[in-house]
Length: 262
Image 1 (cartoon, helix red, strand yellow):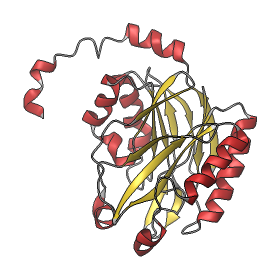
Image 2 (cartoon, helix red, strand yellow; image 1 turned 30 degrees about the vertical axis):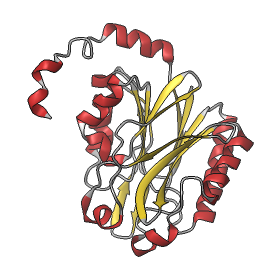
Image 3 (cartoon, rainbow, N blue to C red; image 1 turned 90 degrees about the vertical axis):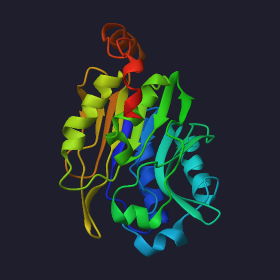
């Protein structure tokens, strides 16, 4: 499945403008044969919206979800996007997967909140593995900091995730996560990992870009630079199956030795 990574600075606080960016990217991705478009963390509103988070947060089945579903169905490709999710009085940092016919397939709430900014404005989710079937692949969702915890990604590996999509707001000086950690996660867990970042300055933050799609051999199939880009790469189920057969990591595990770690 050809997968498009939308590395974008976004338009802070303007959902309407960000939906236009998403619509344009979906058209270009579909024209290039993509079956999935992944946008960054908090894509619809921008990340550094501070006191506006509670005002802008919306339910998983709200008007924004309907707008993304319309974009997905009009262009004929699935979309993963980040947004602030309201559930009653609680707000989560969430990402949702919408199918090519506009059906909402999965919604994930970030489980590991990074820094005071996120802990002040969001509640952590409590479901580590969220998956959906898409074009013959089992797609899992995480958000940014979550992928830096090896237990999180291993849980996806054990649950059979083929492609882990990670909408991200990775900031300076942590670019080594995109450059080094993400390919290692793909290798040690025998999956594809699509890590899709914001880029440029936003409020007090500076996002570093470097979005990447890494394969189960630990090699980046696509890597963006430091500007706004739409990059594409293929997720190959046959290559994944062969890699899993050849790589012994998951088969050679000894879970009985690890109980003290959790």
